[in-house]
Length: 97
Image 1 (cartoon, rainbow, N blue to C red):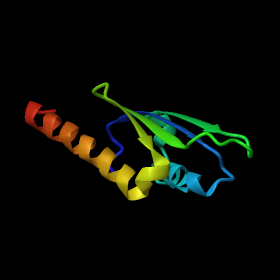
Image 2: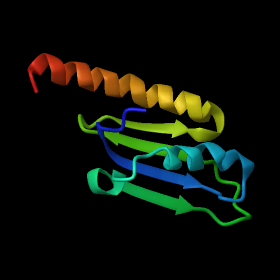
Image 3: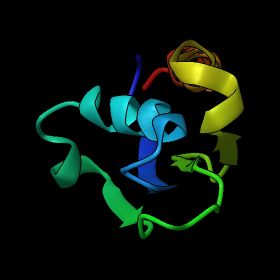
Image 4: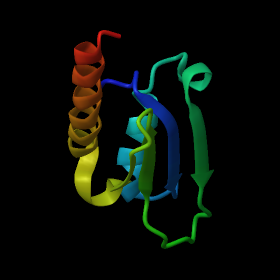
């Protein structure tokens, strides 16, 4: 997963729910120095909450993505992040940076 172009990561999930596994896994795949390069906000819902889990991302170019982690799965989230990150990498390469 290409995290170089992420500026903000925000997650909301119920840590006691099976459906929150994708959001927890996504957070575990962030690099160790992620808090120095991006803003990370994690909101854990109470045990009885029925609110859906999601991952909200913001990229360096200003694009925001709100991904439903219950439906996409970890591979789906990785594909979405990598797809936009490759576009940003291509733009940086073409501009000579």
